[in-house]
Amino acid sequence: MGGNHIGSIIICVLVLFTFGVIYVTTKIVKSFVDNQGDILNSPVSYSWTMRLSLNLLGYSTILLPGYIVYKYVRYSKYLQRAGTGIIPKIVQKCFVGSGESGILDSSTYVLQPTNSHIQRTFSHDAILLAYCFIGLQVSYLTWGYLQEKIMTQEYENDAGEKEHFKDSQFLVFVNRILAFTISGLYLLVTKQPQHTTPMYKYAFCSLSNIMSSWCQYEALKYVSFPTQVLAKASRIIPVMIMGKIVSRNSYEYYEYITALLISIGMTLFMLGSTERENDSATTISGVLILIGYMISDSFTSNWQNALFTEYGVTSIQMMCAVNMFSCLLTATSLSQQSGFTHSLYFIMKYPSFIVDLFLISIFSASGQLFIFYTISKFGAVTFIIIMTIRQGLAILLSCVIYKHKITIFGVIGIFVVFGSIFLRIYCNNRLRAIRRRRAESAAIKD
Image (cartoon, rainbow, N blue to C red; front, top):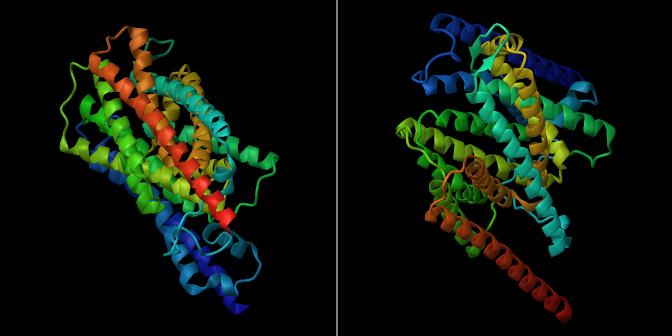
């Protein structure tokens, strides 16, 4: 019994250590901001490495102590001798879940297909895919419009004062807190399958999701439009590579070929249908940030897909857990950099900003519902293909509204993209039919 109490006391000390680190780090960062000036209002020339370092410092005040607690629980065998008190239950939920096996713990981890993927028919797949496609397009086309509006337009108050809103991390926090609230309330009022995933595993995709959003915003200051297009259009390839690393997925040859064709087609379409005469030059910093964006973005969807497959977690459970960690991490970073103070002051000074903030949060939350549902049903690669097509639809919509011309390369790109998608669907169904016939033949022989 004494060992149980000692272990719980050590856990409490480590938790208190977390808050101590947060307090000290907050004081250091705020002191730095006071001496160097407001980071959010500084010019573009302000070092992006410093902004990244400050953000990571904020995230580490949560993640580093959590990692220390995880190591203590794992190597001290705390749960084997702990009782049934509240602290052991919390530790069990956070660091173990239903067992020790999992993505980080097993060296022989292999994904197994779920029954939902095997039993679905082609018509069922087509209806589900159309539902996910339309939901993602509506949510994120509207979200993209609102995002551009918030980050580019000047807000004006009754006194005639005008100002741009500059804190993209605050937008991320508001989007995540609403999504967390909606998914949390849904879980409270509906019956869900038992949640068995160790909570700490959501922190990985939450951090990578935050970092991909930050890199996407930051890269716009350092890269030319063609470089952005190439990065966004070719996301399918790094996603497949990351799928082999994270989930040990195997892909057919036609999947690699169609991924490459879709990337080429989207690049041709985007470059051939958008006018950019005054693009800034691409810098080494911009390339590095884009690489960070592509790595983070491809890791996020693959890690979520692995959790869906291994633990059978529902899309709502995933949404709630991921956004909980995102809120925790972004709130810590914002508090350290005085982000809440500046953003709330902006809201009080420009009340019209509240409407746009509310709308972008609503469409971000609905988009997340479709993201997690799509990944759970079709996997990371299909999701990225849909989101890549979204970039093209956004540009096509802009061409229609503002009457931009589409060159012959843009038209060719459209045919290449949709031809590749139909080829992928055809090959997938052919392969599925061949495997079904082989399975039936093997069953007859047995």
